[in-house]
Image: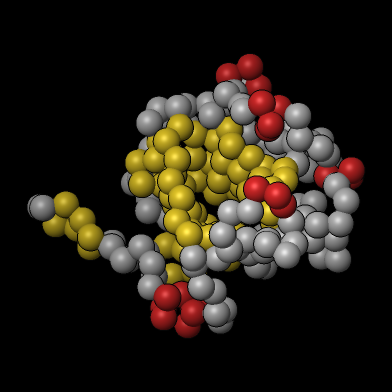
Length: 182
């Protein structure tokens, strides 16, 4: 397992060592011990989630407010996404900046998204299966989000807006500038 740094120090791409032969492949998708050694963090994941999305489905930009903020380790089992993490920590020098990475069932890459980030992704293929580990349970009372098309953030999504499939909630999210204390 190796870590690939991104433009935002706390967000990293995790690339597993994949062993392949004529039967297929094998890789260790997560090891608490290795993750702690590599990251220097003591993160305990308590909940795994999975979604199936059609091409053009955009989910995000989501986060949970304090005291139930979540760190996530995300990956694609089948298909392909553009995965995005936006720094929403007001005191951070990278506040409002984002990191984007292509995650796929072929490249097996994962992204670690620490607490204090909004997260979203767009499915680039039909029947994309997305999984993520969270270090905090889901708490609907503190669930929130930022507009996927916030001009202050300026995310370059790879599909035109008319091709996007959004939930009703995600169609009406607030802008980063209007976000109260995270």
